[in-house]
Image 1 (spheres, rainbow, N blue to C red):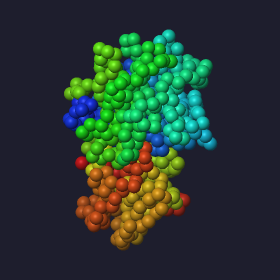
Image 2 (image 1 turned 180 degrees about the vertical axis):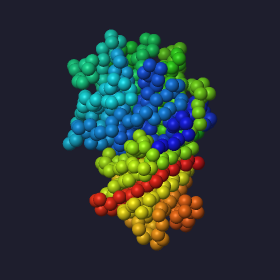
Image 3 (image 1 turned 30 degrees about the vertical axis):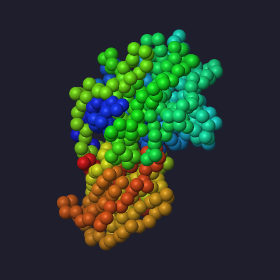
Length: 501
């Protein structure tokens, strides 16, 4: 059973102005890039990029855009045509159907925009496969009806991947959302200095005489990001499009950096933008977190982000602890794993059994981190485990840092760029269980400890181990349990507790 301070993944919201120094907590804490939101009935539904973590595309729901709870995932099975890079799901609903336009890498090909549909926002979702996949890649799909009501798909051609410009295209789409029709037309591309080598992540809305495109430009991800948000407008979907002379309209502030790639939504006559940014303190290690910002339309027909977002008064405290006692029959939907490595897990009688894999870091299941400072503990059933059972901070398949226990010893190890090395090892006396602890500071400084009674921990780290190398450019650090060994060996865990500081 997962126990979390309620409501689960509670969201905080505060004022954020373009030039404001006031703090704004994330509305969805942790690694939820490229957030998208829609309203179905009286409930708001959101999703976000999962990249190479699986299951793909988390689902969250809220009644006020501020306090959210987990509602599963869009894909628990990889679509037959795709293999990795599950990016930028755009969740929408129309005429009693829910659609998700998403990006994924095609087996033997490149990035494509595809679509899935469901009768209910919680699913199950039926995949309809790719709509478009250009030779240099197609990403960031968004559905939009033109001034006559004709349905189009809007997307970005991923030209920056081959050092070319990045056109934003529009092409008619059939009402079944299974195919594009007619000819594609370019709307605009990266042609102003602040946009750098790309524009992407377009979200459109109609207001008054105009169709507006809120879009992102420059570099989205990693420590060197310089992402920002701009707006363009047109009276007809196919143009001509005019970019705002005061772009970018959303940039770094005192707490958050590299803001962009979101979805506009209306609530009670007001307009909001759900988007992502990096916290300046925990930075890339907690990932791109979801923020909410109100905007208005100016008398001269442009968009202006407000210095305050009044629905802050409805915010609830964020969870300080996430714990799992493994009381159910299946893993909670908060657990993730590499899209390249399906774990073999079983839950029975309050224990998680994870079958070992001979990969450098073994097999693993992990969870998002919400802050840069946190403590993670787990209890290993040594009597039932016959592999190296451990606890680790994980960037991806080739980068991790952890502690593990076998029948005789404790080992601190790391995998960096696919190369595994042992940092230290020491004997471990016999006991029915062993408790492992990982402590993180600033998102990347890790220390380890252990206990054989669950109360008195002995430190194994004289100095912190630097895990700055862990996260890939588009992802954040996860923490989880691991099992390393031969086929048929297993690690058995009795609990998992993540406490954010």
